[in-house]
Length: 89
Image (cartoon, rainbow, N blue to C red; front, side):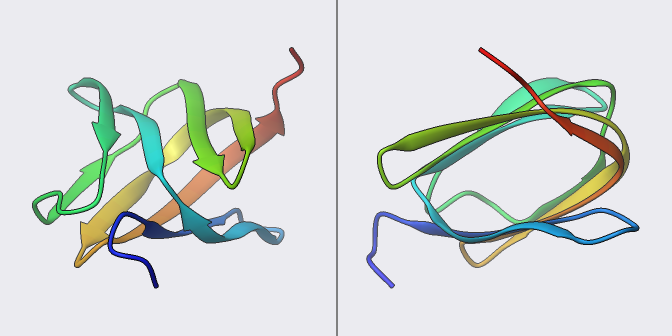
């Protein structure tokens, strides 16, 4: 994996939504919206209702999410959401 990429996995109770390398992730966390870039410190937090946004390749993905949690560790971001819908531009 390139040094400037994160490994992202987004799962819901029904299926894996996304799994791959991304440049950044914006997450609606319990303490507010935050971004994760390569080299981010490890953390675990809960998700609130909001927009999950990430860029994989040349495509920016947006999903409406509510509930769940996120773990960041060694440039790997694992997100487990209770509810998710793809946002339309």
